[in-house]
Image 1 (tube, rainbow, N blue to C red):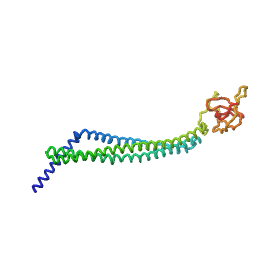
Image 2 (cartoon, one colour):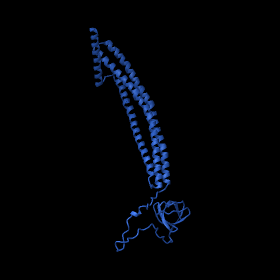
Image 3 (cartoon, rainbow, N blue to C red):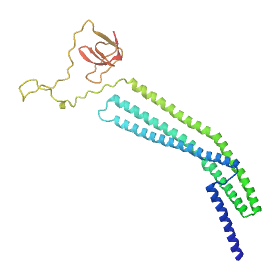
Image 4 (cartoon, rainbow, N blue to C red):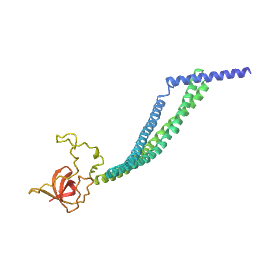
Length: 322
């Protein structure tokens, strides 16, 4: 029994002594040979580089997901707003077009996100498997080094030689694993980056097609002429009275009567309709191809013209000057 107690105490003392060398090494360095320290430096670079790059990609993916969610919400809001009462027909169409564009863009962005997410998970295996195994091997190497130092101190050359030999084997395995990971990184990382670039390119290609369609459709609709609302005329202020009678009959509210047609002059500008135009409000003048118009004023894209005793606004690019 006494021998068992003594053996147990000796074993505990040995374990404590080795642990003390191990903790000292973790704090101050294990003093491996310069060649081994150089390999440890390579391992540390990869241990930092691989997860940092993957985390950066994760940050980009999180941002893309937030953008897609915002696009989806904005698209839905636009479509809902397009159905508001008295929404201008052309504006309604434009809002629906833009809403559909945002919804499609969000869908494309989610697809890109899913593709890159799959690449990122493959990338992560280098951390969860390879780097983890290297860290385990490094810890075994350091513990073997600590054990050898302990037996050197205890002047047990046989034990010291045993763990010195074991340390050399572990160092060899450690270095081999480091360079295997470097080769794996150099083999796989370019493919991961290329796949990410291709996913981005596919997203932008699809999105650009939809952008071009939307832009072309809206541009071809031409300028929107705002509606002239008359259902609130009853709230318009009455014109100031010019008489002195006070109290009773103020002047009547002017009705929408077109101004008198000016007498034609020798230098009048005449134009002919090229495309059909249907006025969207009372102050616009409708005409058909071939109709002759008198141009009163040319200002910007919309001109003032007269035809058959009526005056109104017309799109200047729908007629040609005679």
